[in-house]
Image 1 (cartoon, rainbow, N blue to C red):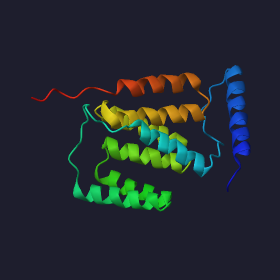
Image 2 (tube, one colour):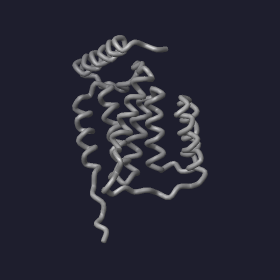
Image 3 (cartoon, rainbow, N blue to C red):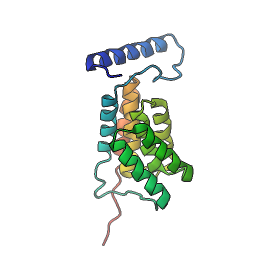
Image 4 (tube, rainbow, N blue to C red):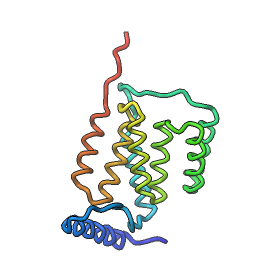
Amino acid sequence: MTMSRPLAAARLLTFAAAVALAACAGGPVQDPWRGVDMPVADAAQMVASIRAAAGDGEGELAVQPLRDPRVEDLRQQAGRLEAAGDYQASAEALDRALEIVDADPALLQERAELAVLLGDFAAADALAQRAYALGAQVGPLCRRHWATLEQLRLLAADAEGAASAREQVAGCRVAGPERY
C-alpha cells in the first residue's frame, strides 16, 4: 500500500498526538510503534540516514572481527536481495547468518536496518540495542547503532530520546592509535 506524504505525515502526527494523550493519562505506552504504517520510501530514507551516520571511519578506531565464510556469504546474499528490493528474503538470509553467529554486532545492526525497512520498529530497536551492547562501542558501527535508535525515537515522537541518541553518535568517534 502506498501513501502520499501528506497522508503519511498526518498519520504520524495522529500517532504522536495519541502518544502524548496516553502520556497525559498516566499509563505507559507499551509499544510506541504499534499502528505506525510507514511508507517504504520513508523507511528507506531512515536507513539511508542511519548508514550515512557511519561515515568513512578514516582516522579513528574501528574494530573489525574475523568473519566465518558461511556468514560472509549470507551477508553478501542479503545485500544483493536488499538491493533488489526483497527485504523479507534479505532479512531471512541475515537470520540464517545469526543462527551461525548470534552475537555479531555488525550482523545484528544490518538486521536492525532491515527491520526498519520491513516496518518492524520494535525489533529494530531491540536489535540495535543488542548490537551496541555486544559491540566495541566505538567507530562507524557504533554510530549506526545510535543513529538507528535516533531514527526510531523520532518516529515514536520521542524528541528527548532522539536528542540523547544523537549525542551518543558523536561519542562513538575515537581516534585510532598513533602509528610510527
